[in-house]
Image (cartoon, rainbow, N blue to C red):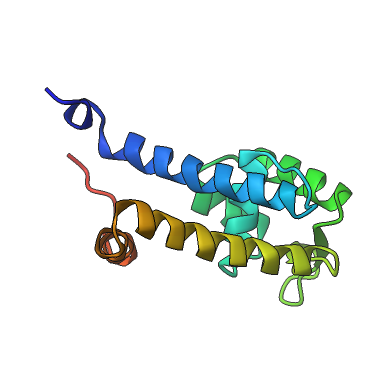
Length: 145
């Protein structure tokens, strides 16, 4: 068996995520941005998708609420996000990018776009387009085997 046959799809997707995240982290540091962990980076990416409730962030990432709250506490202390009252449920809090975090988010979005372009230069724009299309497809609910 070749290496790609020994490696399952989940491992390849995680490896691809880490490639993108490492590139993001390196370029953010180069631009004077904050150093964040992979967990914090994943939380920020989900917030960037428009998910605002910590419980929904946990659900999206498949991690505990406690882990999300820990990352959020760290991101709040870094000044990247804020927890504000939820307009729909006054007992709850929602996450939003802070005034400091918003410009950094825009820099990060630009870096991610440039990383995608660099990946296209390495493996081919067509492959990147196909990868994007496959990942954007509706996979439906997880399959019970």
